[in-house]
Amino acid sequence: MAQAEHHISSPHRRSIFCDYKERGIYLITLCTEGRKPLLGQLMGTSAEEAHIQPTTLGEIVVRNWLDPPTIQRRAAKDKQRKTGQSCTREIKLLAYQLMPDHFHGIIFVTQKMDIPLGNIINAFKSSCTRAYREMLTPPVAPTTVGSTTCRARQVSSLWEKGYHDRRLTREGQLQNMIDYVEDNPRRLFVRRKHADTFHVQQDVRFGDYSFMAVGDVLLLDSPLHAVHVRRHFTPEERRHYMNNCVLAARNGKVLISPFISEYEKQVRDVVLQEGYAVIQLSNEPFSKYYKPSGELFDICANGQLLMLSLSEGNSTFSRRITRQECCSLNTVAEGLASLTAARARAEAQPTDTQ
Image 1 (cartoon, rainbow, N blue to C red):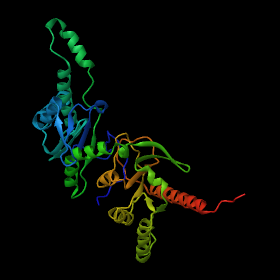
Image 2: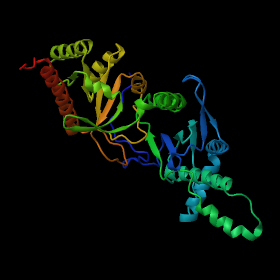
Image 3: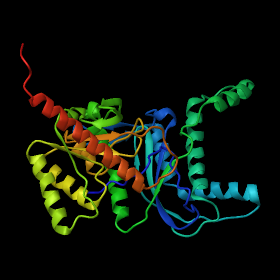
Image 4: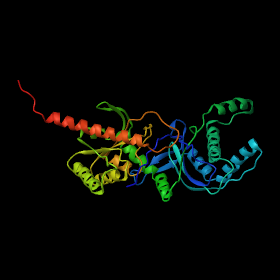
């Protein structure tokens, strides 16, 4: 099962440590202003048949994306106008996917550039916004040209400010990126079919905790078993502990953990493959459009997953989870499991009769 990275999510996430002039492969995501479904419509009667039928504007967006020389020249002219320096760009397009309210594209920067990748993305966005404004502003008589110009300026941008990017950092990641991009229509179909499951619920309370939640919240009514594979375990102790966790799931308990270590993920994957459910804690704040990543997406649609987050707010760059956060999440998991155990003991005690 593909492993989900622990990072803070943002629709405009930018890495503060990345040199965007350098050679590299990037997954770019652009969202329409207000997430308006201006670019296309989901079609198909099943997840396997799901595809996007572009609008006229969507077709323009795709044409602009597939014409990188024009975008490169526009970015180069902007650079020359501002600095007096000329520049050339070498970019290769590897994959793209138009969606109703956003656009994914994978770009390969084949050599070091004079200006950041963001300049090229901004040129692409400007080209699309220009076409959008022309569509919204009908032709008028010469006597009213001035008012038309003013009206065109009042039309908002097609895109939200900024963009989201993820840079390829390891071998094998490119195919995962391409698969993710091409799988977007199917995932949208599944999300709409299971709208309640993928709805981000706020202020889900359990004990003294308040969570953001995605998935089957009814799993919190089950007896819970915390999974925390300690570093100090010997191989034999670790094997015994992991087996006991799987047995707990088979005996009706729902495993709960941030599932951070490889051993914890192995336990999770075995349990999920056997058809049982898990609750996964995250340090990642859930935006309105959050959804579990990788294979956990379909696991969630099957009702086998509940994602919980204690986090609030958002961040503008990706970062890995810290050891302190790992310890805190494990403490929360163990606390929730203890609460369900105490509840079960209380329910099992006979009540006094008068």
